[in-house]
Figure 1: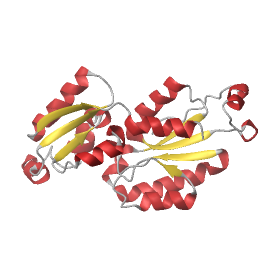
Figure 2 (figure 1 turned 60 degrees about the vertical axis):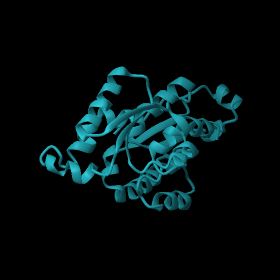
Figure 3 (figure 1 turned 90 degrees about the vertical axis):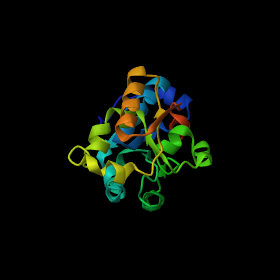
Length: 217
């Protein structure tokens, strides 16, 4: 779990930005733990101190059927304490269930099927229509063993590699940061999977634009 940030901005600053300080004007972001580093960086860069962050375990992505109930529970626990709540997930394999739940709860979520799409930009990602690419982000590059290699059992049964990845042609590293060491880590992941390697510098893509709009909500 990532920590809940608790810094409180000056009321005059909030009023100047159009926030309702009488009700606290605070915003909660309920996010996937895989996005914690990026969200905290955006908050710090932009001075969004009125936005708190609460993360759900990133490992939920290995069991997408658990994401929607977890988000529902987190919203229910926090809704009385915040002026607005936003959900920093894409659909993430829930088959539209998360979008339906967010609509029922009256909370907005990040547009897009998953973080690969909104990091690159949803329109650009969709236009590529890459069905033989396996994607890594900064987070997955750092956590490749914990979130890919071991959960798939490849540490115990390397013979499964062809079954899981035989239809892929390349590994695409969608880089949020310019980190040579992380690029080499991603390249090594491609080598382990027997895939060609491609790096795309995406930055935060649509995630940054979405959080900016929410910060002014």
